Image (cartoon, rainbow, N blue to C red; front, side, top):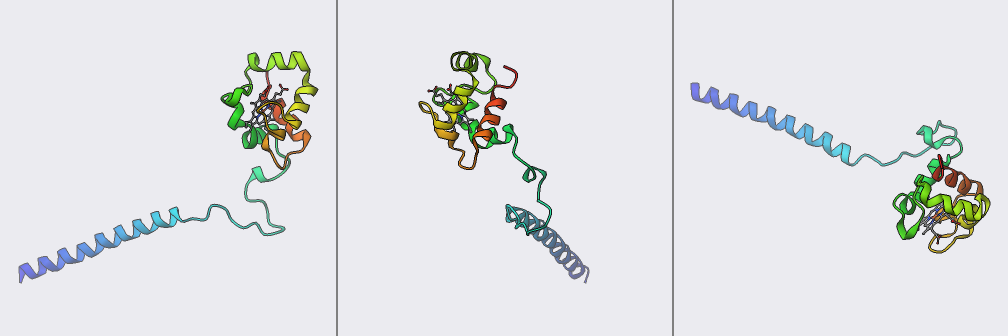
Amino acid sequence: MKVKALVTVLAASCFVIAGSIAQEDNSALIDRIKPVGQVQVAGAAPAGAAAAGPRSGKDIYTGACTACHANGVLGAPKTQVAADWQPRLDDKGFDQVWKNAVDGIGAMPAMGTCGDCTEDDIKAAIEYMIEGI
Ligand code: HEC
């Protein structure tokens, strides 16, 4: 009789443990399969603050330019490194450097591959890259 009671208690605790493990697994699974974004309904508030208002030069830089300009890929002048930028600015002046970024120069693709950028967006991104120089 005692043994049967013990077995019952053990079996019951197994169910409890198994149940709690199953629950944890489910919550981890639900986290993993959460949708990446959510549909924005017209008229509803934007999902994040970043989605509102015009993009800053830094936003544009982070989205389109950082891949090459952060580390000088293909010889790109590195972001906020005066030694890389000053000679270009001295030789050509800001407006010509800006025009070259819009048109493309050497291995630098036109508009820095930013398909939805305006020329002013490119200017803002350059101003961010030469900030403090
Ligand atoms: C695929 C790599 C790549 C991407 C992406 C890229 N650049 Fe460049 N960029 C370069 C390279 C390489 C140069 C150096 C070109 C040269 O002088 O021959 C350069 C040069 C420049 C220059 C200097 C032009 C001059 O006349 O000296 C500016 C300004 C510039 N990039 C702006 C940008 C902006 C703004 C973006 C993003 C919107 C961007 N780049 C994205 C590779 C890139």
